[in-house]
Length: 248
Image (tube, rainbow, N blue to C red; front, side, top):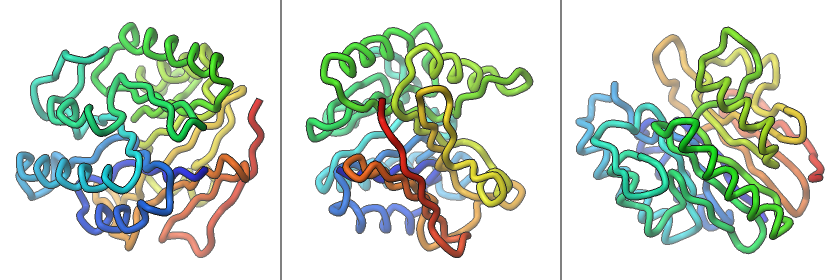
């Protein structure tokens, strides 16, 4: 089973097209937030229309899992689900795994999506319920959250909350975006980190200052559960980076 994980697409149409062209190769495409771009010249209403149309098309080809990011929180939140989420994201809940939902993909992996605008108190019961499913089914578990986890003071509050959740629930994988800059990726191999019994997969894009860098495809990780292999792809690196893993 193979999943493609990415984040921070920021309504870049070439990346949308590239991901859709790859979709049939993967059992799921996982997007850790920021599908829209509040600084993009295209009006947000048009971005939402374009993005939702693309997501529906993508979902016709493979399983799609996404969580909202800060750029996605552009409208009045919907309160219909287990947690608040952007209304345009809630409108896709019947065909995608979105904020607050947990799903089992192909009977092989549990995935849980967390909303950017949900509080820690709202996220905890969602994670607790998914943790029980993981234990009952004896399957690996992926949590999708826009914020990366951290255990260090001085980092943002949301990152510290994410770090506490990793410690408390120990998911197999925590997939996130949001980190900017090339430094962690090119010099510190920051796309993959181990935190206790969890593997953190950071899949944001590269920036030059405040400008998102163009590339023929978005940075992404391929998670191969059968081969127990992680592979990092970036147009800004000469070769792919790989790491084997084991699951407890």
